[in-house]
Length: 152
Image (cartoon, rainbow, N blue to C red):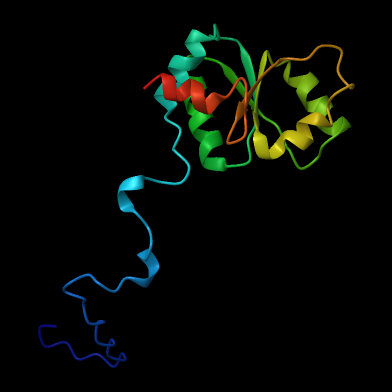
């Protein structure tokens, strides 16, 4: 570079390019037009859905979601309309999870279908139960995924 002598090891030559794009082992069998396996959650759609459900400023919503990206998108959407969001720890089922849910005073709980066993461990431990919406594949009723698809 402009007369600078370096003692660093020279870089390896770049790999040869495949001009016909025939050989791509990492992408073999992947249809790029199909989109990602799990659709991303849009915070704006979450906010519109929450307004339609009657949630607003001062309402508390508890999240029991395993995927941090989805949890953050849901939290951002709920924060847009002024709700308080409490994130629950699904790794400690039973009484600790029930205590966290009672302390949060949540009017609604969004539960990942992958953490349904953790939420089931709360049953029988609370005096009153908040409304539940399920997030993820396998939810037959009160599915957040289907509700957000309707917002499109």
